[in-house]
Image (cartoon, rainbow over all chains, first blue to last red; front, side, top):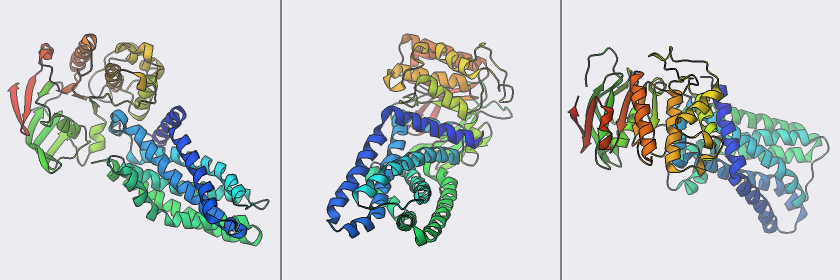
Length: 227
Length: 243
C-alpha cells in the first residue's frame, strides 16, 4: 500500500465531509472573527498597543480554530464506527495521520489567509509592500505546526468523554514554541525592512519545530489510535 | 474445531481481556481451521463484540496468545489486518460520504481482492496472491452495491440510509475486499427478511470460496447455514456445542 496515496485518500475524504457538512467552516470562521473583535474591544483605544497586539491575537484565534477543526474532523469520523473501520484497512497509521493533518492544515491555512487582512484592518496594522510572501510563508509553517499538534491530540482524546475540555488543555502547552515562532515572525514581517532577516530566522526556527513535531507525531500516532 | 492444519485461521491460547477493571474474556482457547463457519452465541454483555474486536486487532489481549493466519495480533497486527474484515453492528461507513464513495475509500486503502462482487461474478482461488484482480474499480463498486440491493442509493449520502441499508453497505464492502477471515458482529441485526436471506447467501458463498467466517449472532433460526461449530461465550469462557 502506497502511504502517499493512502494519505491523500484520507485527506480527500475529510475535505468531502467538510464540504458537505460545513460544520467546521461555520464554527471556525465565526469563532476566529469573534475572537479578533472581542480582543480589539478588550485592548482599548491605544493605537500602538492595538498594532503591536495584532500578530498575537491573530495566532491565538488560529490556535483556537485549530482545536475546533481537529476535534470536528475526528468527531465526524467516529460516528457509526467509521473510523474504526478505516483503522481495520491495511493502511499505515502514519498515512492516516498525514491524511487528516493535510486536510486540517490546508483548512487552517486558508482560514489564516482570510483572517490576516481582517486582523490587520481591525488593529490598525499594515504589511509593508513586498512582505506578503513572508507573511504567507509564516502562515504556511505556523498553521502546519498548529494542525500537526491539534490532529495528534484530537486523535488521542477522540474517544474520551471530556474531549472538548481535554484537547486544549493537552494541546496548548505543546504549541508554545510554534506560537512563539509564528507571532515573532509575523511581528518582524509586519515591521519589514531591516526586520526581514529577523523574521526569516524565526521562520527557520518554525520550520525546525514543524519537522520535529511531524516526525514525532507521525511515528507515534499508532499509540494514539490503537489499543 | 482443531484440525491440525498447518496454519489455523484463528488460534487463541489462554486469551484474557479486561474492560473497566473487569475480566470480560477469561482464558479463551479456540482453534478455527481455514474455510470453517463458526457461530458465536451468548447473552448481551458476555463479550462477543469484545472477542470480535480483539480478533480484528482493535483490542489487545491482556494476556495469552492470539493469532490470525499465523500472525500474532499484538506484534503483527498489520499483517493480520490484511487478511481479515469486520462487519460491525452499525455497518461502519462514513455518514457524509455516499455509498459508492465509501466503497472507493475502502478499495483504495486495501488490496483489490474482488470476490463475489467482481463484475464478472467470478470467484477466486484461495490465497491473497491468487485473489488480486484488475477488474474495473467503478464497475466493481456498482456490482457490489447491486449485489446487496443498493444500486439505487449508490450516490446518496450514507446518513440518509436506514440501519438496514447501512448494514448492506458494510456487507458490500466485505464482498469487495473479500478477506480470508470474515468477522461478523450481529450480521442480521437491522436487516429485513430479504436482507437476512442475502446475508445467508453471502456467508454461504464466502464459505464456498474457502473463506473463514466467524459470526456472533443471536439468530438461532439461521442454523440452516450449517455452521461447522456453534460456541457460546458465558462468564468470559467459551463452550463448544458442536464441531
